[in-house]
Image 1 (tube, protein in one colour):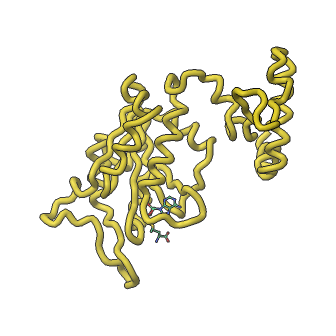
Image 2 (image 1 turned 180 degrees about the vertical axis):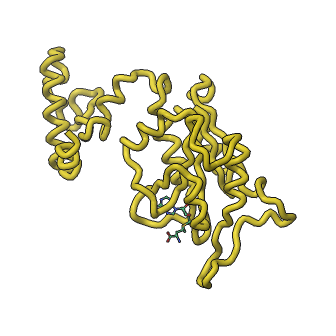
Image 3 (image 1 turned 135 degrees about the horizontal axis):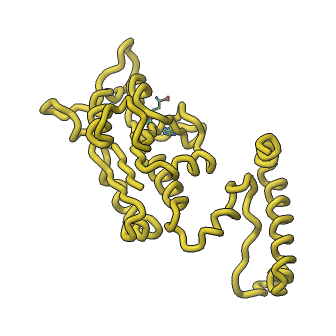
Length: 234
Ligand SMILES: C[S@@+](CC[C@H](N)C(=O)[O-])C[C@H]1O[C@@H](n2cnc3c(N)ncnc32)[C@H](O)[C@@H]1O
């Protein structure tokens, strides 16, 4: 998958995506992540990406033209044409709240272009040439970059071949509408806390059943809203 991020601070992405899973996935040629400077897509000598809001008010608004020019250059066609398997995602607090289901859909695209806003946000006309508006949650960040990191990291691990044991994805929190069951590692006994005996029993059927029951219990206890959503989805 090709992922292009457009931001006025492209340098913030390098340290994040040059370690761990993102680094390995790029080295194996499974993902190609590039961050671009929005100012490279301006045409004036001051490389201006923002201007005052029409109607007055505080702060500056990001202009639509540099985002449009960036998209045109990256998707190689009119940004209004939704073909070629690309998705253009604008990070905005007014978008749809990011969840695992959306990530799974994004992970099937060939090409993601992620737009990061700053200042008081972006000109509303940017919304006419994006395929998705995504929010990280009901709070306001100072820029879209952290959202882009979250999105790219979590999409990346869903791409086939990126994680070693693909089976682990099926049991992860949110993948089946439930939280994951509790996990333990050595030592089996620590400060008087014991690992549940079923996990060291070697009985795979009993382990599977225990995990399924605990996943449901954890979800019921910590996130009952997920169970309600799951019932409506089934
Ligand atoms: C300070 S915010 C602008 C907020 C805008 N004035 C509003 O009230 O909706 C600047 C940029 O940060 C990013 N941002 C802020 N909060 C976000 C959130 N919850 N999810 C995704 N992006 C967010 C967006 O790219 C936004 O354009």
